[in-house]
Length: 229
Length: 368
Image (cartoon, helix red, strand yellow):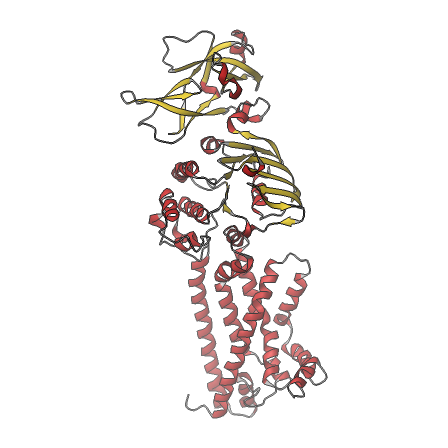
């Protein structure tokens, strides 16, 4: 590990920041969205549901391309960036976060929506007959019962953001400390023939991914034993 | 009775394939059973009363409080109800204690009088610190009933709470439920398709059929109404509120008074319930023109034939008024049912208005 240069540590720290921030934002956005998709009776909700799932099947370059236009100086992202004196959101950390949020959206929403749907309306009805307002029923019943789904969503989002490459390449570029995340760093090492560095980083990521997925499985098994009626 | 002491509701709505057309008017006290075949809308009625379903066109008032009228609709969480679902619907992420306390008000702490009373009545003490996952069906339902009661409801609604249970659990819960109902000042609306349960606990009966109410009123009145399907059933029975007169320990025989008529019922020990209830099956009643003497049958009472109806090709069902001599009780007459063969009907040349004797082969003590 001591063999890692300053640049690599910077990439690791940047990657963790990006993944952490993306996960937090997606918990805040994804939870109400998943709730609405699970509970709403509107016929057009599946149109929104489809949009949420699109990043699962679209090539990252397609998402990256549109994001680039969106974030660029002539898109809404540019107008937004003007507010704090920037010309564009592309090739910046904020732009990367925004891109990751969109790209990882289905990884947060899908497991949560499944959890909300699997728990059904009966527990919420029971809560209502016990004087819980819809808001209280959400916090005291729906969320605790959906914890396994929430946790899967968070871990999937986090790991998926860490592993993201194509979108970052399109909208982030390769600016150390700004947009140079791990996956880009590895690509960079391979391109420049630094195979040893690429090897150690790649191996570290394989181990990391393995541990995360294992932890996810174990936690899920424990939790769903607790909340399955 | 003023509307302050009644539960009045009218719902008109299409719910799936069910056309709901309800005009409910029952007392806001005691136990009201809702009986009907599956698919007749019993559960939908209960859900609509709870506000879990919003009837498009509806009115609902409970003990003078309006819950639904025109565009006004009080949401479920603002209705002071306790609802027991068929499947208990305990919260799987909470232990038994937290389930019980979920709807309890802050002032109602664990260990208070109400808490202790409910925990004792439902025998919940041994379950309190357990997880809900390894409870039996009967235990789950007891917790669900306790949870509903601890939210201090003004109206208790139960949707076939025993139907998912095996016979052993039913036998375990029914007496608890029965004791609870008698001690309870909260009105209970109890949905069931099991007449035996209803005969034990109900005071008022609502008969449902295809989304509407066929009849509603005091249980005894509906049991003895020749126009209702209960009358023709081979399990037709009547229930009687009785007072204990005497207990003969030598023979283990309890003597009950029902509006002046005496009934003897064998019981293992002296009955202790506050209100006793006897059940007599129509097929256990036989008729004779003169007072039966030198017979092993303990209960033979003079009656007058009120109505007679051919129930099927073989049988007649008769309603019999008790105590023809005692004119003062006629206004709230106590009626027995007898199910006899058509051949007996013809050979005894029975007809309405005749004074005869009813021999009751077996009287069951539903509440002792």
